[in-house]
Length: 114
Length: 114
Image (tube, rainbow over all chains, first blue to last red; front, side, top):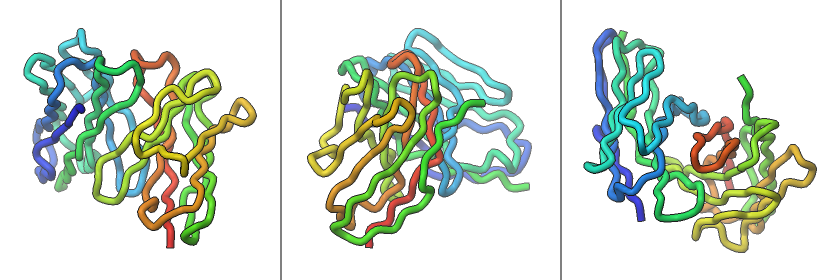
């Protein structure tokens, strides 16, 4: 069964810093990987979807990379802002089943200090 | 931007009662999902639904649970005979093309069983 781990569990940075969130997964036979943002008590907002054939995806100040062979993805946030404070989740789909389910990591709780 | 809408946002129910959680997916989406997140734990897959039938379900999704798309727009999750451990945030999600697509999640229903 796919296991997804996110490190660190929590991160606190001053405003303006660039930062990297890490995601690792045990089964490298993935179909795609999606990064989400979750605000306290709220739903999941999709940030980036990266297909297994892609190495990276970019959206604004966010850049997600994927290294399938080593079972890793990173989410890079440039010039962090207080509004970026949230929990960031990565989720992967494997090719080992025919379904659509995502396996989620435990998340990284980010606090950006003004 | 199109949204997935979930109602109610918070529901409190007594142990043993039945609850129905409602979702209105994005109108042209074809794939529908329920996930749950117990407080402090990972987001977990419950069930996926396509072409008016369940396409995949997890071991969590036992006979206590059922899903329905009664009228072509709503997508419901019914939990019979609720238990204390069913207390969680329940998320509905929808997607257009299945595995190659990301999901759009709703903002969730917080279910509290007392």
